[in-house]
Length: 421
Image (cartoon, rainbow, N blue to C red; front, side):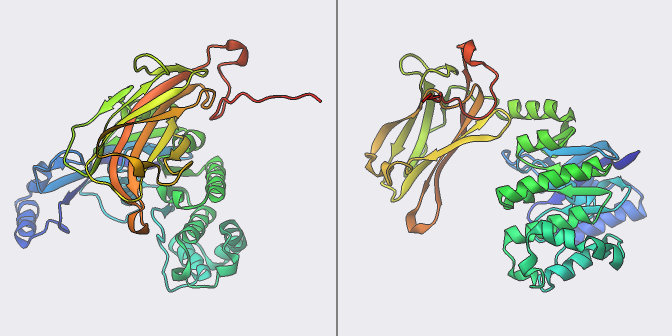
């Protein structure tokens, strides 16, 4: 049985304005569609939603020709880069906004958690908001009361349940919002990346609860940038790019396609044009202890990340930040230049410099990895972006000593002594 059906759905916006923006546009649209019974003239124009491209039209298609079905009991992960249209898709399904073209058919009650505070009235207490949300979902007071204790216990907000929600932290609001959405037994549960606001303990609980919801035959749509969570929770993936569906299939295949595509063009060497700014990293490469750059390393050799930077003016509080992620998107290791010595980059001379960062052998487990790099400053006690390189390199680690095993799980491959006394 089909739970959700998107029929050639599109959502168009006019850049910088609400609606079509002018009375003349609205009159023209009304005349063409209502009087002459012609097609909406503004549906024939507009750019795709590509953030990297310069706009050539005042109109933009946040979503275009979305056409797929979700069967009852399916757990579907909506995947894509920022700006791909994921949140817009969920807002259309949740009736926060209406599609410009096409139709959406959903069978059953929909509970949505799209952003912090969704569906909550800030002046009402947590308890009052639980009853209000349940009523919106069509539940009776008795049905809500039967679930009330479970909702409060899961949220961990017992102490503040009779306090107005405006006094809650963002994490508390998300906890309560998710508990309401999950425990009031909707037929369709829609969850956006908002869960990232919660702490690690709550995220684990939330994923477990969504698995329980799915195992009960209800439908779940889940947007996340955490590929490991998507693999664990979802059966199917839908990949969006620039407002269109470009891949739809088993979750592992779609995630692999997305990760390979997102790292396309990355290699062991990276560079970008030098511009006139106070500080810039303009080149990076991955090297062994001796020899040329390469992309496959043994567990038993050091990996050197060499950065070429240009300093035009000393930046107080400058520090570099590196994040290394596994092939499934899970962050394996993060570190910055202040970890061992504060203000380590304060000694950078003006002009060109080389920074070598050594990833010690027997640190990361065999697998594929990508490196993200940026530079910030703590000037004025706030994080100020100085130079963002982004995803710069990718590499693989192998374990050629098969007696230790190539297929060990986990993030690290450290050799540990087993001492017998």
